Image (cartoon, rainbow, N blue to C red; front, side, top):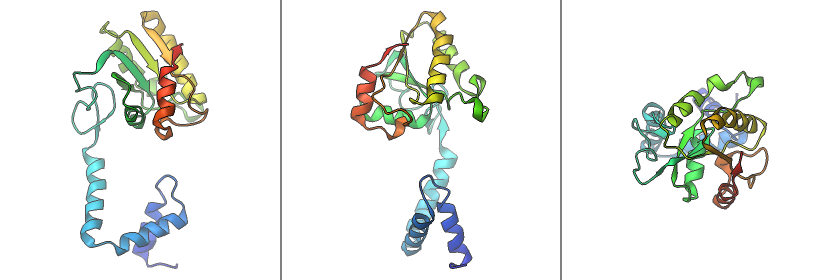
Length: 198
């Protein structure tokens, strides 16, 4: 072992982060060791607080620190248009472009039979409950442009169409296989503008 046990454990912990390999984990661990203790405690508390105090909006499923997220709580939003996304991170990506004025519905994933995820594991039932209000005019399907995202969009479209609500799909200004959270604002904006009936 090259490092004492506490440092080795810290390196191992950093390697659990997405995109962090052994060398980056080592650099991060050594960086933390050189920080003042107060900053390390602050970082650790921030992580624990984020884990303990973050919940999901009771209406849409977005990240929130209260029962209703900042979008659903905003009375200026167009409640007649719902943008359906796979993950709460996708709401943040869409909000960065500052053009969408409607509300969201987070499915909590995508249909993926290979991973044992079917429609019942997603928040589709909650979406249908929201649509029963009769005030929704358009449902924008903004799932990721990959096989799972397309399958999910097709399924949601099929169950919503009989309700007489316009169902659109964001245009593929996004590369196939990409995730919404990594797209830039211009690409997302063009994809939203170029949506089509589904």
